[in-house]
Amino acid sequence: MRTAILIPVLNEAEALPAVLAELPNEHRVVICDNGSTDGSVAIGRAHGADIATAPVRGYGGAVLAGMALLEHAAPDAVVILDGDRSCYATDLPSLLDPIASGEADLVIGERLTRAEPGSLTPQQRLGNALAVRLIRRATGHPYQEMGPFRAIRWTSLLSLAMEDRTWGWNVEMQMKAVRAGLRIREVPVGYRPRIGTSKISGTVSGVVRAGARIVWACWRYR
Image (cartoon, rainbow, N blue to C red; front, side):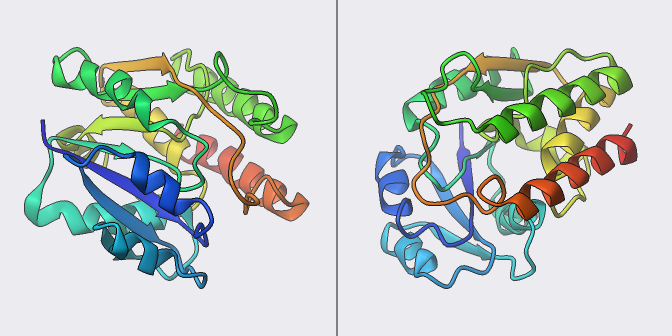
């Protein structure tokens, strides 16, 4: 199964070499750069990754830029993976196998079961709990959380017509996936403390902005 790994990046030069070194060579890797100024793009190129550029800040916009780069050589599945080394590349088979076997269209890495101490901040846990509760009220689907490490069939991803360019991206995907009747699975994945400081949970203003966007997205895509 042809797989592309999209890695949204904003100044992750400290973590990126380790992230890229851990990924299997058989997958296409795309760095979705969101305006890095620390050499993240050069590190990606040095490791053989393709580069997609989204200069306007926003997680969803970075992923959309990566998707646009894949259009002329479409993969069978897409993995989205943070560039801070919080996720374990060894969990890739757990995400991809249900898609390869035809059992699922969207597989989300559930971090709560195996999260290492200090890897999930209280604000992350609170945001996850709020988001899945709102999604369940709107769609009836009992998601466990909003893990960023996820895999989706390429044709399924296109069918969702994703549009959110900020931190409502995962909410939009999970709500639209239910509406579209996609076969959804959540699998436990490892999660460790990130390298570097989070642009969202690392600041009060970031937490407030992300939280507001998540709530807005739950309303917008309900």
